[in-house]
Image (cartoon, rainbow, N blue to C red; front, side, top):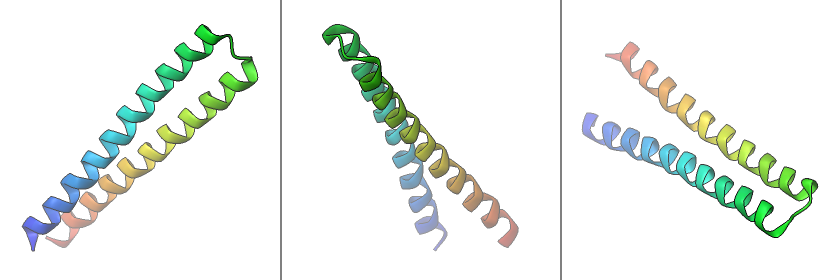
Amino acid sequence: MRNDLDHKRAKAGQRAALILAGTGALWIIATWAGSHFGWTNRVRALFDLAALAGFGFALWQTFQLWRSGQNDKGES
């Protein structure tokens, strides 16, 4: 039972890390593309807001992972 919980927690941590890394990479690519292709500030702001949403979602996933660890400490 404990091993299954550790496996789920590890998968959740990997998912949060992939969300963070993917959001960061896509944001850098969008910033480069915006300057290279001369996109308007409105389009660039749209990609900035999408990146902000991605980082916020990753933060939420990390917070949930942290809280699940805190809840498990109290049950031991």
